Image 1 (tube, one colour):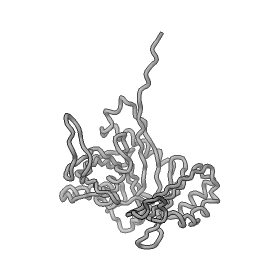
Image 2 (tube, one colour):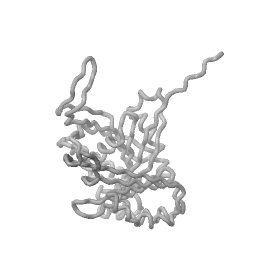
Image 3 (spheres, helix red, strand yellow):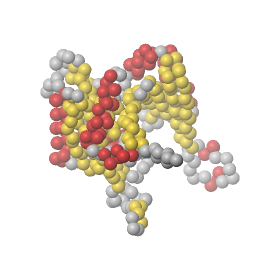
Image 4 (cartoon, one colour):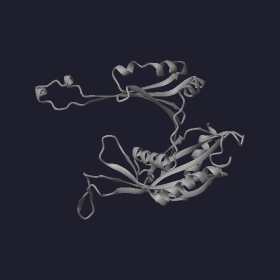
Length: 318
């Protein structure tokens, strides 16, 4: 009797595709109407960073630990006839006042230790809209390579820091009227998710015999609602409905259309006493990697072979 074949393990690599701001280029910012001028702009910015190496760091709110960028390596390539830049970023966590590493013995981490990775990958794909060389629009398509060794939040933080502080490139915030038009054209939204967040320090919510000794009370609430096959005619009313503000300080509405996610965030800024609205568009894709391929995870040729079909798929759907 033959032994049953052991199935090979596989891993899924998420590759979210973000868009930078869509900007008008009336004065020839890059000196020309070509992809080559756009990637040259990136090269010059990176050269300037490499010469001065300013400290680049990012902190999460209310966290002591911070992440710092140590080095950015540029890898040139092409997808079709379009020149691209694959960035290999070295970054580490520091201010580690807790934790340890163990080999033969346990080594406690301290504030000056560094715990990081040399393999945060981000691909920049240039896009030009308009045939008039004197007046056109441009943006970057930004692919994040979320390999199985990385956490999404940390990878996004590293890449946003590099984009904003080295290249002065920001993730796109869409105009709400454009989003409404996009959703109305679909008629039916196949999947919709709403998340609500609140945080309070109300001592009146404490109900036990120790209340008289209370020093601090912190209550966090999260509510998640999921819907399917929602008529787009209901969307504008949903977005403008602000009754949630009575109980929550933040609302995120996510619309899922095939592999595209449109994320609308409404957040109350207490210091400025106003609601901040942001709208992001993310194209969510993924790569399946067999266990036998894991040794190639960080090889340039392997990464470009895996990312090229994703940008081509994205462009074909937009």
